[in-house]
Image (cartoon, rainbow, N blue to C red):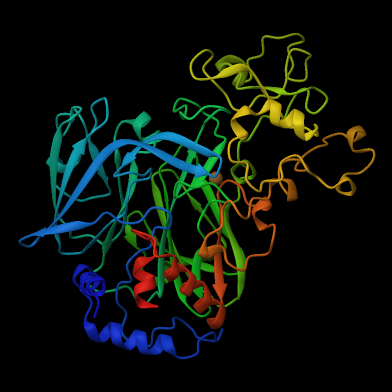
Length: 491
Ligand SMILES: [Cu+2]
């Protein structure tokens, strides 16, 4: 028995027999869509939650207390192959790593502030003592730069909870993470896979790396800190019962939609819903500061999309679509606050006026934005496109920027009102399969990445042979701190 498995068993209170039973069963053929609940035949147990692209915060034991070391710090978060932003997060990522504990645990979180300003950590939804609430200036002194605060909890709840800075702007800069409390009595029916997906949004202008946290309009929409197609798909075996925990600590509510299946909402940020109260759907609205746990039997093979259904949240580097579009050499990036919010000062005073062009996001005017920096959104030559987007010239790799098949566009396209809509926003010219290559993407349709943007990922429901092949490739990759490690150990 590997150390890793021993660790998992200790961590989640799993008996050796449970592993043996589910393991033996996993070796048998699976894939029947008639299986009502799960590939696991025995008693339910708590599967560790997988937070793809993020992973978990490790802990040590001090007697009976689980001790976590949480560090707030400046992080470089790569949200897309060509876009790395300066965020504030925890232990190297934004969102921070997921903390997983069991109901009944005694937990200590040693928190260090390595940010240049005061902060504290709020434990969202915890029914704990006021001294541990993490509300700066109310329940505790702020933790100064270089300072430390120790939080202690007796975990008596169960479900999907969070931690985050209680300073609003810091939260928008990435200071959030998940806190899973596994129930003492595992939830029935047993789930074979348990995933967590954070929903976040950033406003980052072209050629900038610093999110504008005061912005009200967002052009980078991310799941677990990655924008499609850089998101890592959820890998499940045909017949698995799957739980997905959506967590939203952003500015907007997100209707999260899944293709090919009907799921039931089984939990909220307040814990488990009794089964009689579960409701079916294929879209669940995840409001700000809410969690929604959904469960389904993955009985329909295919690469099924999971995405926010707000149209603007299915794009990257989104731009306002008004004013002169493709008939000019480029468009300004980020108007100032007034014009960006629609308070027009040009002539005539209408968004289609000669003084206006589309703007990429909204800015503050002079602070972190660049009204005069033109970039392209039109059918320009490849050279012009490259010249206009200096930030895009590094590592363009296999991206076929600017190449769109002539016969994809009607001859009279430029005479048609509303053209272009998606013609130069997605499709073959945005394909970057090689740049986002990873084992979890193995076997996807060639060119898939040109159609994945923003809050989009897949649940890949794979028949046994394909599942085994993808899992084998994931194991082969031997990635340090692999978020999928707890699944790979069992596979
Ligand atoms: Cu959304």
